[in-house]
Length: 199
Ligand SMILES: [Mg+2]
Ligand SMILES: [Zn+2]
Image 1 (cartoon, helix red, strand yellow):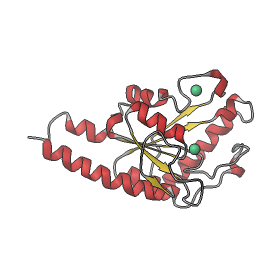
Image 2 (image 1 turned 90 degrees about the horizontal axis):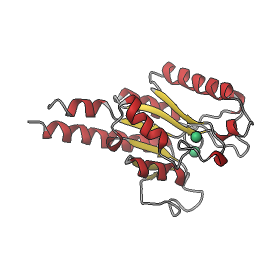
Image 3 (image 1 turned 60 degrees about the vertical axis):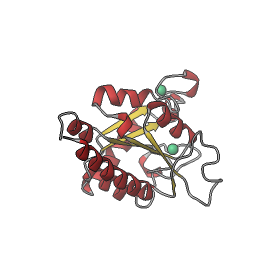
Image 4 (image 1 turned 120 degrees about the vertical axis):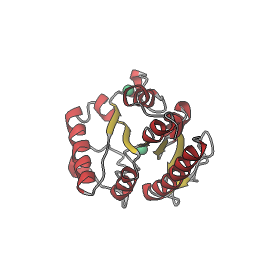
């Protein structure tokens, strides 16, 4: 393997949106741990991704902080507890990237803006073009496209027409489990291709 390939294999991430992918969505925002409902299979999916050597990065818009509906401390506590559950199951959340701003702030970190993804590139050394982003909203897909990540949509198929509102065609799965299987297969192929291209 060439010197450039090994870092590239090691610097792949799966960016995972929180609400609607790991936690069940609430119309009135998740305001405390008691309101957290883990979606079926989500923790196992994170464990499988992280055990495969991919970096797992939570990527979440939490405008409830900017709207003063919930404090940053409470949101960080929720992420800490989620991290502990994942660790207890044998996996790891490597980083949490969060936009806490009100949409009216027009920041660069609120999806669909790709600001946090570029932060992951510069601060964590993530190779964006070899990474995936799993989300449940068109804004997630837009952010992935803007940063050059591979987008994947999670959406219950009994909901609105799957994917009709998306900027580009992308794989759609009913849960993070399905999306994780897709990423695992794709990452194994990517690893094999990188190794095969080495002199
Ligand atoms: Mg979401
Ligand atoms: Zn922001």
